[in-house]
Length: 309
Image (cartoon, rainbow, N blue to C red):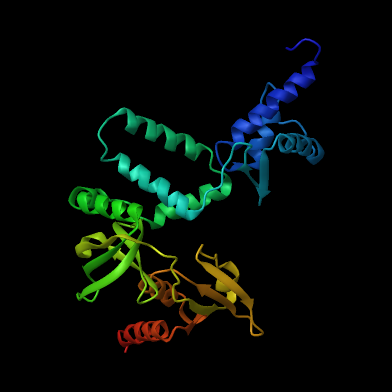
């Protein structure tokens, strides 16, 4: 016992640490919380809401945010907690998958420890989102790194140097496409690796799978990328979809119209990827412009309906 403090004071301090330990293990029932106030024989003493709130307020003062929902307590945030977005959690998942085929080395050990310490600091919101990401994404990129290691490295180099390129590749329709473009970034999406490029002629961003590329040639080493002006896609959402929709970094909202539709302006997303995403929104989404994308989404709907006729 610390000199100058009472036994009751020290007991209260121990209960604070016990509460922190309990909440850090995950969602906690009310009956498990009050067990901390049991006597030596295990009998739970009467504890009022006022007393319990004093302990909860003490935690709050020190930056420990504990919340309660339907009789369940959960640790929402600690002073050292961090909040990550879905794209950042994907990056962590990618690093974890990379560990599986890295050679045993100091770097592998340090990366593993880094990820472990990082995950310990997820706040409640990030932990929930991480569960969703883990259940919906696959990051088995071993095949790509083994077979397309050289191509991926070249794509990374092209994006860093920023020179204009002439790319020939096979699209989803098994057609050979040739475009002059500006390399933007290499993306690790699901179980594939893509290079994102901007085509000035089409004023559009394309995401090209590495394995579909036939050839890449430099147009000019001195011709650097200019600021891109992508064709903007305008679409509307309604209902719960509009309320819960989270804007991408390349999107902006024009707000709701008189009929309750939310208007979104999308600039810089691959048209094929965007069309697939908007198609999933079904009747709660309407594409306004450009006409090309409206036609593409309508065609996807028609082809889907044929399967049910």
